[in-house]
Image (cartoon, rainbow, N blue to C red; front, top):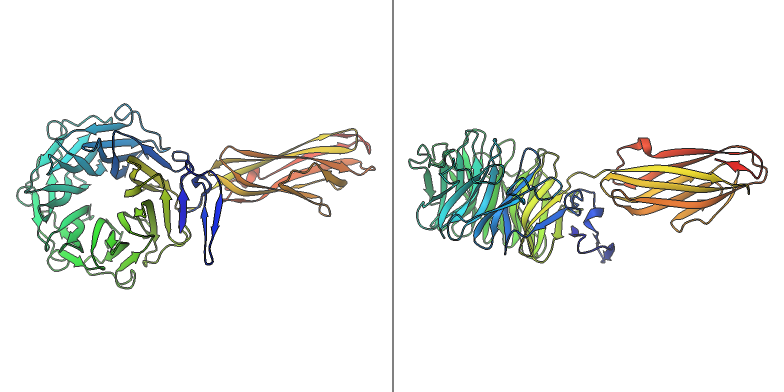
Length: 531
């Protein structure tokens, strides 16, 4: 497991060794590896925002332009939306300072968010201490008054209502999922905020799967069917699939619903779809992260984990709150473990992907109690999470591919009238990621007899006439310069080439064209050298 502490909290490199394992705790900026925090976001891969009072992001969406939208609550009882630029700074074209809070009615929170094709932002949650609430914002953060008259709609489906999930259909209709009383509840709205009466007769559908049941998320199939996931019977993972008209789809599980006892008390907190139509849920079972994969007919997919389910003890009590499916069918879950943000990545067969974080899991201490409640994948494959840290909205971005760091090499030399050269070799990291263990060699001329004033991080190989220097770390924009004296033999004449070359660095250097430079000096006599 890769355990990461934000570089705002730890600056030194520490190695902790036990009998059977070594856990490397590094500044996040040094981890340009799959599972490492992306240092191009917020400087260390994390951003926290105090929107007002106690706040949290319960959901996020990534716009087509790469901007990140979060939705949750602020001041304990108002819906809060924030938008970030791709570098983690708040987008001041949204709400003036990058954040917007909305008092829909008494206590109101947003639990989900989606971005429409036209750039408008839709949130869903609850308001009035127990009604389903949907709000729509223009791209500048103002409420969209073409939706519900004032940009908000509340719906009393029956009893205590909450919308936890939200999806926008291709035709612009808005689907929410949650619960009403003790039943799963799904609603569909027209683009103007009115309930769509072609769905369930009045725009809402409630489903009693068994006992107390809730929908925690919703997703849409390409054929227009609606998939929800949550909990039923007070403690089993539950999935339901609806036809476009709101009736249960009886080709799924026989009656449109499937319940699965993964182990002890379990529930699904989010659902996603594989490209082949398989349904992936993530949540918790017996205090561990739980993932299940279902075939399109509702049966468990036994190619995943042997029986269709996988539970993972990331550390102490943990839970997955969000799930995302990659194009290569890998599955990423996010949540919390021992009060820290937790991310896990699974191969298509359910095994942990040990290319991610070393063992398939990463925990990150952003600050105080922190957790990730939602996850999205960028088009470049990077993982974005949103949640809370120290009572503030927290967003983090993780790498899924090895980073790259373009390390360039330059060398200069100054001749003297004493038969020597002052050599200066420089390595510079131009990014985009930090570099570690940058090794360069400088090949000195054939007539080099000795080297003096060598820096501590360099070594001299006399037979090969090479100086090798190592920089343990170079942040983006940083350089390391090595200066020393090379003494020539007394009878030296002619050209004296000096060549510096990068021979190793982590991560990969994608631009080898600037990995080497040669400077040629000339010995006019055994004592006079010019460069």
